[in-house]
Length: 592
Image 1 (cartoon, rainbow, N blue to C red):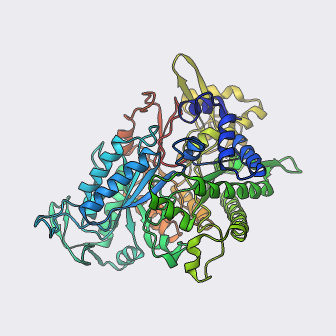
Image 2 (cartoon, rainbow, N blue to C red):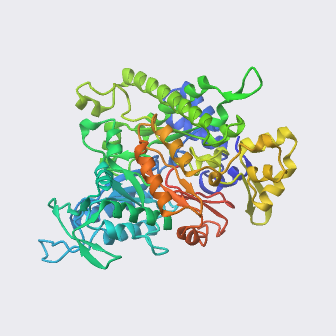
Image 3 (cartoon, rainbow, N blue to C red):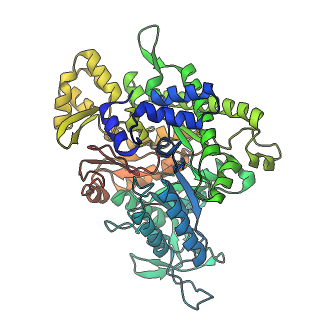
């Protein structure tokens, strides 16, 4: 039930000795199911690729390792012992196959005094480099490069160093970095006011070193700070922005306090020590023929798959072998899960809808609303049988009585979408097709599933060679007269406007408990002002985070020299925090 490229990828990274895809699915279903009915339903869902959990669940279910989560949030307290504990904990998590999020906002700034030694602090960046080294040394589960997220408040005195922390090629390669930007930052920018830098150790103003002016300063105009963030995003794609107050407003458990950080790809706002427990539904597998012969979504099947995935992920929480006891306690306290989708671009293609059009936005909202509704219904049913998540008691009955504190999230699905043979997450197609080279064997054509099916139906499969040879997009081929106008709705990421990218993310966020991992692609000609417009648009539209990548930026030049650590190929694709080798299929995403 998987294509040849996925079979090779599975052999390299997922399959145990003498295992094939069917045996893997049987192993996972048998381990996670509590009865024969669920074992059968789990197996059918996995084997058909109707929906898949995150990679560690596929790799480790029923094995000695047994760690099934994709990522965790680890605290970084403001003392040396706590920082070294964070390093040890992150090493344990990464060794078992998980990615790690860190919020550095509690650390005292560079040159702040240390009472115990009489010296001064080396600052946030130095400790991030320590954790980066841990990530460089330890592969996730021995199978993929470590992935981490570093987060820092916008008014921390080290923020100006932070924004430029990855300006040099090869710096902090195990980290994505983001700025936690509150509503106050945007309000100050609108009023023309300054941001005063605050020492988190005592809540008092503290001078920040400005690496551009090479001098200390007590404050910075809010507009200038946003300008600097935008310029760095334009230049290198980092830092990302986390809209901190929007994140808190979406918190489903405010009675437990504020959300404390996020996972490496940004789709899971978490409390310290909580885990990501994620699964994604393959939308393309839920298409059906309408009475008129057109393709449409089977919402009844979509709801049933969602209910099955809710049960599977609840079993993941219960049967996971957590590397640390406080991770297990945190996971079972709130029982957070995140069900998302993949193959969105494929269903748009199959249904004749252009990604980014009004019609696509309407369908996207309908899809995620249906997933959210079915997930809530199933979680409520499970709560009646097993009780609500334990932390629910602290809500005094004000929160919905569910088995899970959260239910929905959009992950990048870098690996599992490759296994399923569909587009990743809610992204448009990055490439419509490419050639997967293999040592001593014939190459494999890897083509977007919906596009390939449409070519086959139109008797135009012979155009695939031209598409891959010249790296054409379908729209380019339509304009050249090489494909009929009926293929013009097939657009790739660079043919979707930045505004359309943001609006698609915002539509999904309306129906998602947690957050969304998505890249806003910009053309090379985009300006810093264009990036600023996107920053403001995402904020006003209710997005919880923003990741921007400009075609041809400096980071892309650096990444173009990146070679796959598994097969050594330089035929790699870079999207958001994912790197996928187009030859061996290996993905270096933290999630999926």
